[in-house]
Length: 156
Length: 156
Image 1 (spheres, chains in turn green, brown):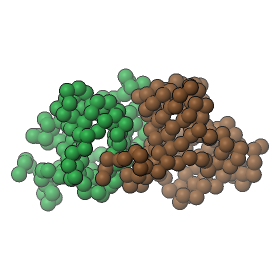
Image 2: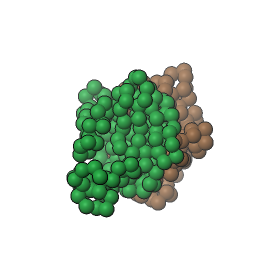
Image 3: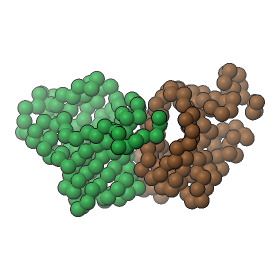
Image 4: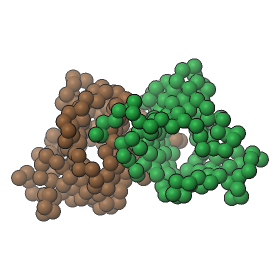
């Protein structure tokens, strides 16, 4: 039925990033709300950040709009313009192809949560601002490269 | 910048429904968060329902996924299966082309709010379960008809 039982939604932990970046995502988990509800056009996840955790490497999307609303605790949105404290009810929008990369970091001593929505484009390129890496996603398969397009083999 | 100032987001009141249905939407308003943030692929609105207000006529979408998270107060989700109380943090998902129509009604004595996300399909058909009406939306223009496709001229 449409109303979701959050206790029965799939919980995603871990990261598809290659090391050493995957280990930097420890303390982050995502409840796959949209998937649980049968949605296919956009993803909806309830992300939990433990103290010290971050949402992702700082990044931007070529083809996918993204939206975030903080629902519990507090975290910091970091983008090209600096740091922005985010409290419950605070929202942020990241239009596709806007190269102002972002991520969320929990610097508090308690759990932070936010709802994140992102379009499910068939083809996507994510660019990581602070490291020499990007990801190309085609039909669900992610391929990491350097920003010049050559295969990613480790930090450089 | 990506973080939104909710005090500066466009507030939508009123309804595009023909009468007598437009008047039934009194007490409902929507902050256009996605629009304020420059998103084009899906809409994100923070809907406020005053006591007694409803979100819409009960309806379902042919082409657009929809997702709701209640953020304040309490309301009731009404669908084909009956009535489902919704409290802050409760979520519901409505996949495109699932004919289980829904709406949200605030039967409490204080304001209820929910975040609603919906794909922006170029062409859409919304069907209203409890009255003989549907809406066809093409490139932003809404046309109301009876369910047999003839022009809507009043309740029947």
